[in-house]
Image (cartoon, rainbow, N blue to C red):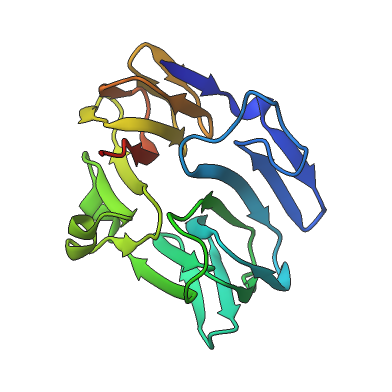
Length: 236
C-alpha cells in the first residue's frame, strides 16, 4: 500500500524566521493518521530565513539526520564540533544519553532542509556527530545510500545510524524509470518535480508512506530528486 501525504495537507508552523511543514504528526500538530513508519517519526520540511536559527538546545535518545536542499546551515554542539553543512551535504547526529547543539543560517539567502528523526535501537550511549558530502553525480539515475544502520552500507561510505533504517537518494531526469526492491516499510518524498510511484503520483514536496510493498516502480514525470527512508523488517 502506498498512501500519499500531499504537501498541502501537512501541518505547518510559521515563526517568521522558520517556516516548517511536518510529514508526521508531532507535538500535537498534524493528522492522527500521519503516524510513524517503523523508527521514523519526524520528517520536517524547514526553511530558515537568513541570519536565523535555533540556539543551543538539547536532545537525547534520537537519531537526527539533516539533509540540506538549498543554501547551508551551520552546526555547533557540546562535543566541540562546528561545521557549515551546504546543499549536497548530509549530517547525522546521534543524541545518545544527551547532546546540546545549535543550527543557524548565516547565509544571505534562505536555507531549505529536511530534518529527519529516528528512534534508535537502544537508549543511552555516547553521543556522536558526523557529516559528509555526497557528490551529486553519484546519484544520477540510481538510488545511493546516504546513511544506514547496516554495517555493510557503512563500509561502502554511508554515514552510520544507530537505528534500523537507511536513507537513500536518487536524481532522476524526466522520463527516467527506476525499480527498487523494498524489505519492510518505507517513506518517500519527491524533493522537487513530479513522480509516479507504482500507481500513485506525487507532486513536488509530497510524501508517501509505503507498507506491504516488495517493489517500487519510480517514473520521473519531471526532473526530480527522490529521498527514501527504509525500515527493513527485523529477522528473528
